[in-house]
Length: 359
Image (tube, rainbow, N blue to C red; front, side, top):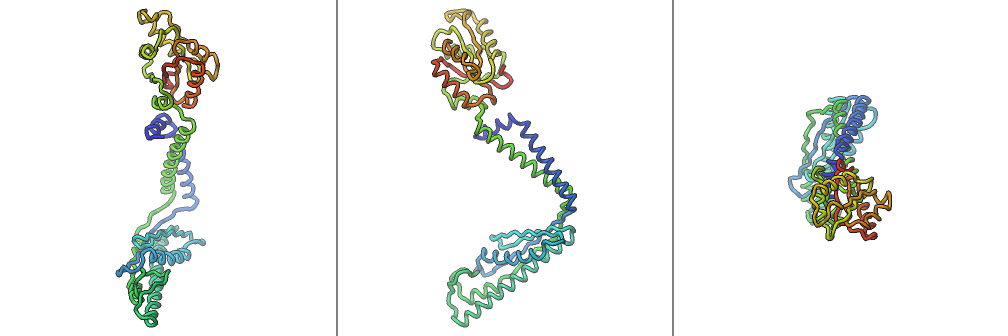
């Protein structure tokens, strides 16, 4: 499906594209409001802990993961139980930082817990780094200042033990304390879930349209017809001029004398409106070498309803296949054309009608 096809689908099913997201949004918003009423107000505060290595010897990823271990331990101590406190941690290896997001029943609790988490994690991680640095200094006394090659350390390979010790001891932490609280009561939850519901409903509708198009393959425009056949496609948009235009195109496409015209729909009933329009155009044209006054126009039922249409098409001078946008499918059109080919019908073109013009 191309973007143009998707846009045509959205325009055609615009009612559902608008209605479904609204319904999903209202339902999700109501669920959010109910959740807010049950759980009461929720206040969220966030603090950030960043570790800085002035030497540049410490692996940023390993250092961030080390700090995250202590952050998870502290988060487990603060969250859970009957306190109503929930903690989320987010690691950013590129900046070597940990973000603590705390949700609590009161503003002060969320602020206190967020700041306490950052400070305690910094103290625990600092102690671990100093301890590791001391271990490297002890290694200097045993083996001298030789490069260490063991795996699983926080220092980039090639550094000596004393360089590693100095790097770990020089790391320091910067805490960005939580200073503001975001309220998450019934109204905010309603707005949040309403937005999620609308976006989710829109996504559902778009996915459904793509699925319908890929499975059913409805004819949306003349390009869809041209993709499955080399026959000329005559799109009718003005019913008053439809007959004259079609009759002119039929005369251009016909390679022999026209005695009768068969109008065969892909599906549905007889296209009597097209028959009347062509018949009127023929009657208003002066009779000449073509013998217009004696031309018969036969509007048949589709082949799926009656095989009579195929017989009439076989005997007619020319056959016109009529298809309706969005109602008729590409596979159905291909099936009709194959049937007419077996019947040796002289199919000279396809008339593509909009839903309003199909009669």
